[in-house]
Image (cartoon, rainbow, N blue to C red):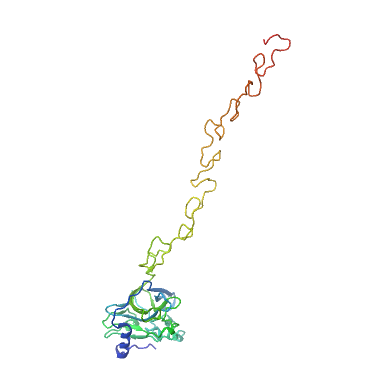
Length: 348
């Protein structure tokens, strides 16, 4: 049976306690860079009563494992808003606070598991978290939310859900950031878009003297990151530079792990097969990369020419010879001749 919330009849004691938690006057530090609120898809429903709806989970992303979230609130100075463009799914047996939901009823009421609720860390009544709520006079943001409408906390007094700090020795509770540095804030089931903002009271490192209070928007991605567009982990959606920018590692030429090839190209394959240099040239007949080969008129790569005997770089007809075959002039002046014939008295 749905627990009926009588927000307007909350005792003065609880309201004063709530004010001491999240509405006490004073000047507080704002959230250091690195804290942000993200919405993540949890389940996409494709059949049954929830067909076409998506269940989202909203988290406060923290910097330290011991960070403690004490209160989530809103007022006219820092309005809280949980907004969908359509409506929130609310189970008939659900509750706006996760810590009152008993998972033993999931079998009988399957959609209860995907009810829309708010929380600090815990997702049901079995996690040892005693979540409280308080509302300002004349408002009922939890009732509006339970009715499927947007949750708005913007009155002068302010409203909240909160858990007093239990001490650092209770760091195993889900109200602390823990190893994943996340604290669950809400489960939201809708077929619309999710947006909004929340005001937080956080004790960093489980230390109440390190308190900050700030209004943070709900984002689909981390607004903190590397804003240097020359860095390897540049985040174009980042708003605040969180100091995480990474340069190109030594020995590499880009952020993908590539190195310079022999041609100076990052990630290149070097000199192409058959080529002799990075310009695509090949060896000429003289073995010169990109050369023009044997010059016109030469007979080899050393600049030699054909001699009168047709020998490349040769010295021609030797002195005393009359031709390239080693012949000499006979007595009749004939190259390689046999001279005056036998029985003759002259060359005629």
